[in-house]
Length: 190
Ligand code: GLN
Image (cartoon, rainbow, N blue to C red; front, side, top):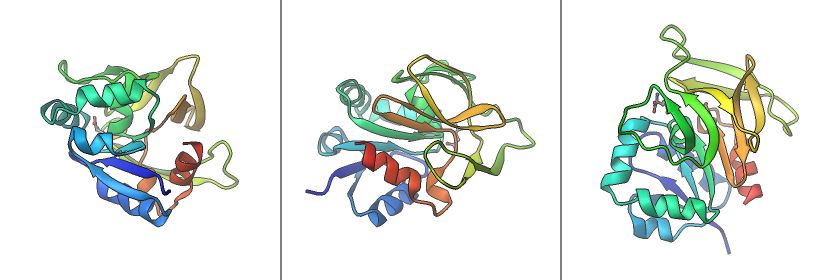
């Protein structure tokens, strides 16, 4: 049976994740309701705006079931805003923004500064035999990684791709460079 991979589709860049996952041959479901979440085996949390996504998670009734699935070990790939939502601690967030706290990292929102808010860089990823072209869009900076967090890639000494248990989080947008390798690895790790 093909695994069913959900893409959280409340806001932000979910469509490109869905396209890349479909190309990799899995069944993709957009997730907007608790019932849809219950049907998937793993979840992608896309980039977008973490404060808005947090509010929509609450309104849609997804926040609690999502926290439950995550604590039960569901595989998750969080990119950019998705990384922020999965972090243990968020600096420069809104006071009412939820941190799901699954990954023991501290992230600072929009911390690459206004002049280089968005940029692209080739990064070396642990386990890939050639660089990955990473697109950063108002990306969070990872300021701290806890002991259980494996750093898979850095950009200028800052962790930009991390894995902790069933979660992989990226400060950049792996769905935007036409390179399927990080999604393929996420699926292989499930
Ligand atoms: N700056 C956004 C936030 O704080 C994240 C940007 C992105 O996901 N590309 O949520």
